Length: 189
Image (cartoon, rainbow, N blue to C red; front, side, top):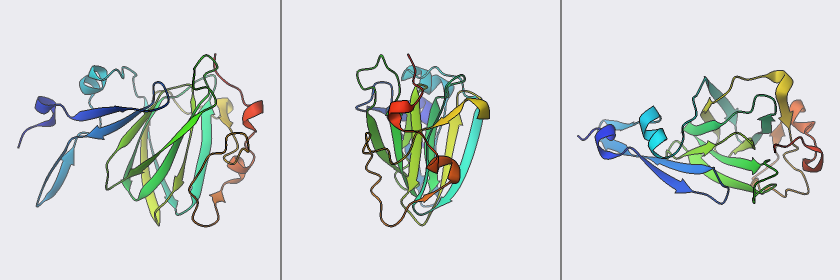
């Protein structure tokens, strides 16, 4: 079996949002299961991601849980998101005022089956909805969690019109229910 480092272990897919990348790792499977390289500093540098990751997070949620839209202003975080089991609809929202896609969002289906990952650089809000019965979501962050710097934009903001592809009633935390309108959100230069 070839090793991922010797063959190129990740495919970079551009998205509608500048800087946001959908990543498809090379999967080596056989009758025992599979192997994939979810992160390699050299490989990521080769595709243009030079950020240093300082924190790994693991989230478990049930169907129709919506988490987000979260971001930090004073200590912005880039995030590398992947799903171990289950499926989510992952959403990135551009908060960079100088960006041609400022105020635009894009969603991605990430699952344990498709093994896709999404890179969301700092300057974006991030959220997801669980589409399967349950989901385990892992994400690497480029900055430490700073509760005093965290901001939340309303997941159901009428200006953004995010299509969460709901199948049933959403389950949203009190914190996320208190998210501000996009028009009142702190943004990045």
